[in-house]
Image 1 (cartoon, helix red, strand yellow):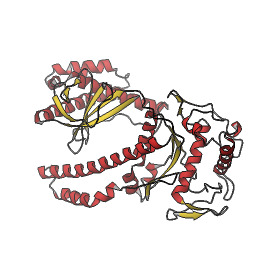
Image 2 (cartoon, one colour):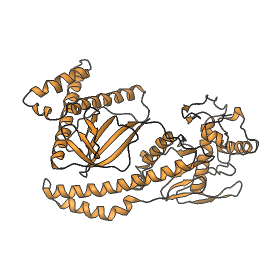
Image 3 (cartoon, one colour):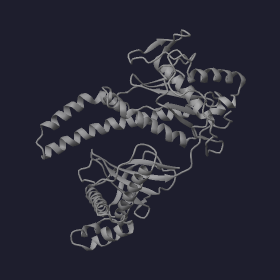
Image 4 (tube, helix red, strand yellow):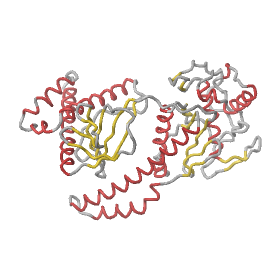
Length: 448
């Protein structure tokens, strides 16, 4: 699997000028090649091949007076910029054809020197790791790097980035084998929220740090100072950097919190189940700032890749699943509840539930059913992903059940309780019931 290792770099004044020139040249090649392809498309001409663009916009452009400065940077930077454009087009075409999962990708856009993020990408021909801890970059020099950890193997590519706060980073892509952790007999369902960042099915809670809320006072002051500066002045540029640095600190703290929390969860559980939240929809409500401050999407993404890295099972529960409406003890659906209701009593069995803990337990039950039904990829004993055979859909009426009726979660709970005593689940009910033992969570047992 491919992993990326990111480190902070500290170039000197000459190296910063060389990097700025490399950023600009890569941007010009990107824009020139993109312009040629857009003009060809508007004129009804065939798609311009990469070989033709490389000959026109890189090789021959260096011999002209207006593009002669392209020869001052490494040729690898220019060629890689063209490859990145090809990748952007491929992602766009795959998204149109339905070959790419997730949100639809838009066409490539022009780059600006005023973008908050500037970067260049290099392959092994244009950089090397020195014995003194520096990283040599072609036509830039040896960059001083702060090594927070060692690289597991030799890197295959390097990306040098400058962010909006003026900081420089080098990130390496390495091909390494998964670091499989010892198998455990525990699994966890996670309910993400705002009052508590995450509530686990075993009752554990992770407090919400609210990094943006804690930094709002200083951000308001810095933003007020920025708005008072004259546009185009050097003082305004300095004030803008101060605001960007404060935002970068908030993002760094949030990212560090996500990594620490996700690592602890992955180490303590063989399987992790998370509800698939509609973050983009919640970001358009009055809770938008708190939703962005929590960073749920980034946290779930980190959980997913760490589960694959360490041989754990990861599954998402559909966002339509009523995790907050169903009693995790008896399966009775009590209907929707406003957000201010943090505790409620089940109308059927009388169990008093904490709203978040009950939702986490329901996510756990539904996640086990997803894994048992073969709708999630789990690693086998050799560490390779295994997709179990599909299970026929239930022959029941589609749609939401009426209030007071027993739901699928109730059937799952009842069958899983019976499976806990007998040690196995019936194959015919694999879509609604699952084994609760460690074999189902780790993917080493059978699904029915």
